[in-house]
Length: 415
Image (cartoon, rainbow, N blue to C red; front, side, top):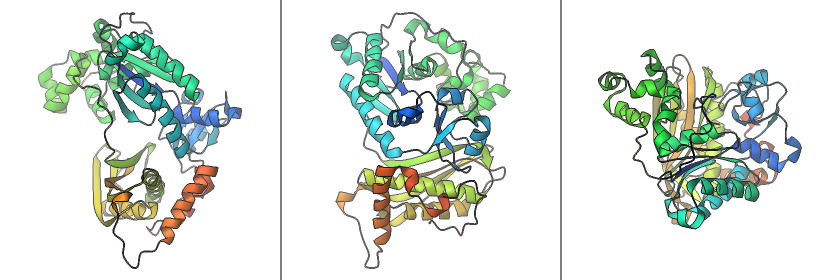
């Protein structure tokens, strides 16, 4: 679920000249929720939220009718229930989302080999090499949307432009279930009418700084004094955003490289002060990372956490293990230790995440000790099999099973 501001009044037709507009951004509509509807057709047409069912859980995805009520990704489930009490809530099933993502990416790879996967549900394509075979960029975008629907049952929105940043913004404004072309000559006009937060690279903290300076739209940013912008943001960031505001983006579509780390982050709709709630999130994230490692036949040597405070101050902490792991218990214990050494910042936590780095294939061999207890490994691999058959909520660490209960006292060790 994208949080970037959109301009509801923005035009849906900027012209039909797609000459030179060979960059496409493909973004799936309500991806997780849409997969759940495909897996359970009885959910079709109903207001739906995907995420942890307990009040301590967070929203992963929601259908558009629920989003219209203010529900957003990363929002605590307790708040989402208040905003949309009639919505159905289903637990996430990461392994099924990965399966559907793979099928979507196979469709994109059949169009062009120049595909840059940004996340599980979005990617850039450079279709310049496919024009003679498949037609104009708009024809290719239309083909992609049709084939994704036919071959996966999912809905894709597509943005088409001459540069990556504009294509990404265009796909956001094409939603739901649409295609938006921004001709090269219309790029600046399109950008300058948008809220400044729509610009790729303007996060919440940067947006607040810009708005305090009276910069509300991308056009305001484009015409703002560069010298004063340098002072506000620093030279490098200021010049990059200034270029993007004028549609200048030299970045090319880069074919996906070998994964060097695996991680997940959660942004909360309300700042969290309770350390036990935060540790519950770390535990869930640790098991998600571990499962993705095992699915990829990988192990990792370094565990890192990321904590963003209410004032947007962001810190990272990491530790390298004596031996690599793919176990959620090991990852969670390291994450707990790192978190305990940092503590809860004043004002609470806005975002928290876990990442496993320095990955290697399990096939390369891993060091073991004579006193290694293999029961944890067997337990987590058994949990994988249960999840595959019955879903993620069928078997979970004990501390994540308490629904609608206040945070339990935690001794700091993973379950």
